[in-house]
Length: 156
Image 1 (spheres, rainbow, N blue to C red):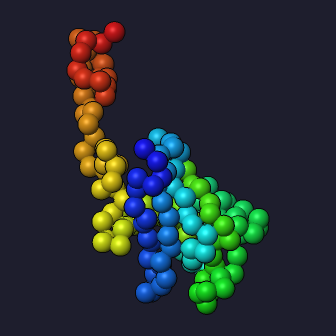
Image 2: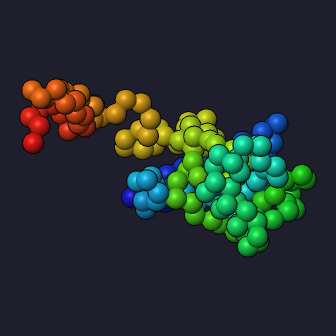
């Protein structure tokens, strides 16, 4: 599968803001997610939510580093916004959305096609919903409780 096998996705910035644009990549990124590339000139919210720096350290540090490196700078097209100076690949769609919006975001639902289909619809295994592997709790004859994601077999 190639990048061209996926449609272009858009992320709407708050307060009727402009649309950021990106594409899902077939390569794996962080936590087993597919990588996501944000395209050059995509807008970035200039402010972050108050809890972003204290609760989302990695995303906040990455955003600050991208600004310091000139990858994100003042927008020439969207007043009061920043923008990407070139394409940038993130480890996941959620990481991309978090940096753009300056808040915690589920990238699988917030990135959408022009027809408003969420990115998650294009994955073989949806990134949300019930786990395919259920947890099992069991108690041994000695009274110990143990948990397993592989099923309720005998304790080894």
